[in-house]
Every structure is written in structure tokens, then in C-alpha cells.
Amino acid sequence: MDFSQFNAAEQAHMTKIIEKKQMQDFMKLYSGLVERCFSSCVNDFTSKTLTGKESTCVAHCSDKFLKHSERVGARFAEQNAAQMAPQ
Image (tube, rainbow, N blue to C red):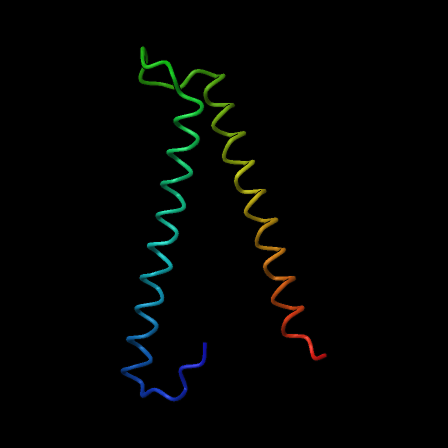
């Protein structure tokens, strides 16, 4: 984003707002991932620790989500590049 039309104080304020929004988005994404993987993988509450099966399930769930996010990000970048390309 180009904030060159703003003075230094306004630029700093806009940067702070964007950083706060990015952190909120990250935390929402992270908590959603934790909730999804925990709910689908952990179903035995007889112990404080995860079983091997639960641990493997959580690792697979998070890995699957991260790979999906990478693919979505790559497609988003491709679409942006295609729209920005001179025609």
C-alpha cells in the first residue's frame, strides 16, 4: 500500500492499524486450526497427554491445512499477477 500522501504520524498510525489487523487475522486462523484439529482428533480425555494416534492425527490435520493454505496463496498470487499484467 502506498501511504506517501500521508504525513509521518498518519503513516505510522496506518501501519499500526494494518499490523493489528494482520495479528487478529493470524490469531483467528490459528485458533480455528487448533479447534478443527483438536475436535476431529482428540476424543479420549482419560489422560493429560495425547496418545500416539491423536498426536499423529493432529500433525496430519495441521500439515494438510498448511498445504491447502499454500495452494490457495499460490493461486491468489497467480490471479493477482494475471490481473496486473499489461494487456
